[in-house]
Length: 231
Image 1 (tube, one colour):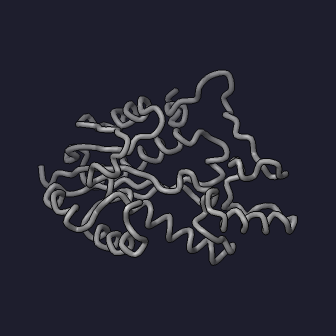
Image 2: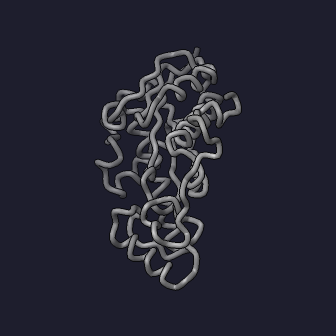
Image 3: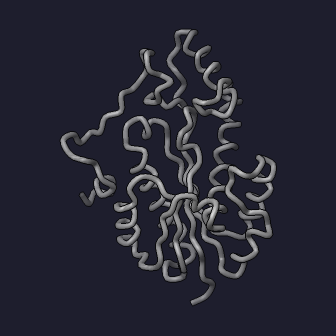
């Protein structure tokens, strides 16, 4: 059978006004699973950016993981929960193809929305083992903590790049006064927002660029199966 793996999934930037949402799926070898806490692996929100950077370097040498970005334009068009689920399934397929799906001992996902379709799609992907989808999984399960650190570090790195290109200030979240003030200055110049902005967020309401998010398939609830063409 070879090495067995604990797989965790989490995201960063879900509520951000600026940039992509980053979904990470990480496979932790069973042989080092019990050492993660000793390494300092925790929910990424409990760590400084410097500590996340250091842990990311260490985790990238010891774990198998996939990072799946979700673009602002997709977030403006589609349901965010379904986009998150689709990215998790895509990341799981990448990771399980590398470690062998039969070697996945457990999958744990930080809960969001209704997990029914996500469970179904992971089963369709061939994973039949234990599957846990819980709130605060990023705090309670080391494999999800590791995915949380990877997602947050990658997102922070991308925000730094966007800051250099577009002059973004602050964290990129609508709760950050620096980010909102930067966007207001950009819009005051009369130019459309840069493509890194989520136009469907309430911060843009009252401006000519606000996008009212509407599902393309009206009249029924859009499901994850629709995204995969099986609905």
